[in-house]
Length: 73
Image (cartoon, helix red, strand yellow):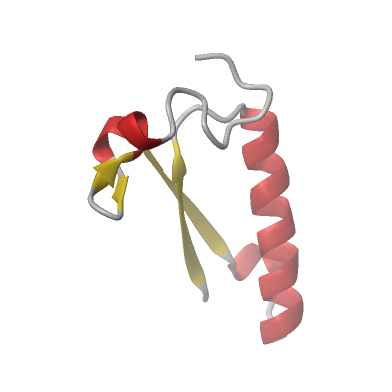
C-alpha cells in the first residue's frame, strides 16, 4: 500500500489538489501495478513564511503568491 507525501506552498485551490492527487494516484498505481484504491496521497501545505531555500524565507525571497498562478493572497 503506497503512501505518497507531497509538500507544497499553501494556498492552491481544491480543484488543483484534486487534479494533483488524481494524477499521482494514477501514475503510482500504473507504475507499481497496484489498485488505485491502495494508493494514499498526503498533502502537507506550508506557509511561505515557514519555508526557506538557500537561507532565505520564501516569503522574503519570492513574495506573496509565488508559484500559485491564479491564486489570490
